[in-house]
Length: 159
Image: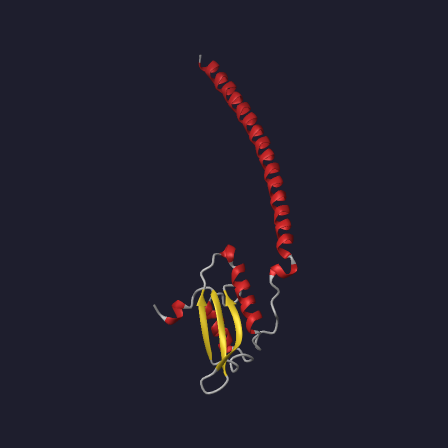
């Protein structure tokens, strides 16, 4: 498997800056799996081409973290924790972890509200569907009866 193929995954990457003969310090921590350059290769490539960042780092490490679309939030959490621990100079913003602001309960409330709304809409749609189904059945019965009348009329002509 080629180098590029390996990096066509989601994960966390760290850009290092040389700070001595054989010493490196963390310059930037990022994640891949969101937005532009959605995989590790794409993100590293964009940093290598960046006028602002390309000269700031010399080495990198990439950590492939397989996550589903539903669990992408974990990548952001991992990135946030690493940035909080290392505080690299290339990361301008310090991430706010959901737990710090008590967002988890708010998010749960919002989701519960949305689920409740969706369930009500599904119930309304079910009622509408049943009403339409009944109308179609009545129309179908009427059409069958009219068809029988037409047939009987023609049968009467043939007798």
